Image 1: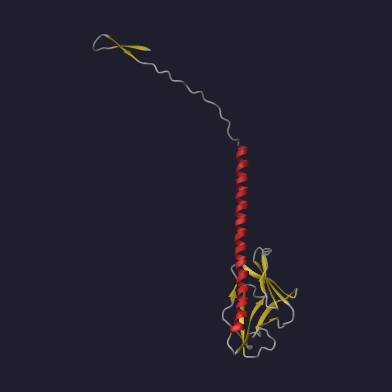
Image 2: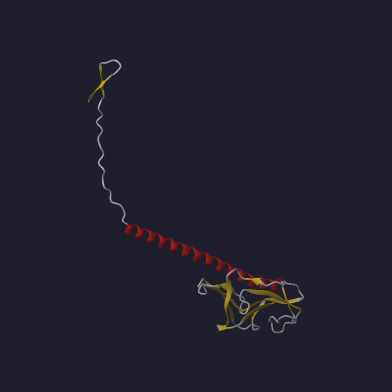
Amino acid sequence: MEIKIKSNKKNFLQTISFQQYNVEGYQLKTIKGFSIIELMVVISIIGIMSSLMFANYRQGERDTVLIYAAQQTAQDIRQAQNLSLAGPKDTYGYGIYFNINNPTQYFIYGDEGIKNGNHQYEGEGGNDTKVSPYPIFLSKNIKINNIKINGVDSNSADIFFAPPDPVTYINGVSSIGTAEIKICFTIITTNCKTIIVTTAGRIEVDKVE
C-alpha cells in the first residue's frame, strides 16, 4: 500500500511506502456456559456436603468428650478401690457416691475406723468423710442420665470397697450385683455411655450408644 503526502515546505511529493501487515482476524466463538439452574444445583450440592461434614465433625467431637468423661469417672471409681488397698490403717474403706438428684457431680468418701456397718455413705454428720471437700464434676454439658442397680432404676449408686481384698459393696450389698451409671449430653440424651461396676470388682465402660 502506498500513500502520497504533499509537503508544504519542500513543495514536492514525498512518497512514503508503508508495508502492509497482513493480520489475520480472530473470529469470536460462542462458548456455552452454565445456566442459572445448573449453578444453583452445584451450590446446593456443595452446601449439603459441607453440612454433612460439619455434622460428622460435631458428632466426633461429642463422642470424644463423652468418652473422656466416662473414662475419667471409671478412673475415679478405681481410685476409691486403690485407696482401700493402700489407705491408712484407721480407715475402714473408701467409696464413691452418685446421686441422680446431683447429675453433674459425685464424690469419693472414706470411713474412719470400723464404724460403717452398712458399707454405705451415711450422709452429712455421719461416720464418713469426703476425701475432698469439693465434689468431682463431670465434663461440661454432660450429666448422669440414669442409674441402675441390678437392672432396676435407682436414685443413687453407692460403691464401697472394704479392705483388705477389697470386697465391693453396691448400695450396701456385696452379693452378686451390678451398678450401671449412664452419662449423657444434657441436650442430646441419645448420645450416652454407661460405666458398669460389679461386686466382683470389675469396672468397665461400654461403647458409645
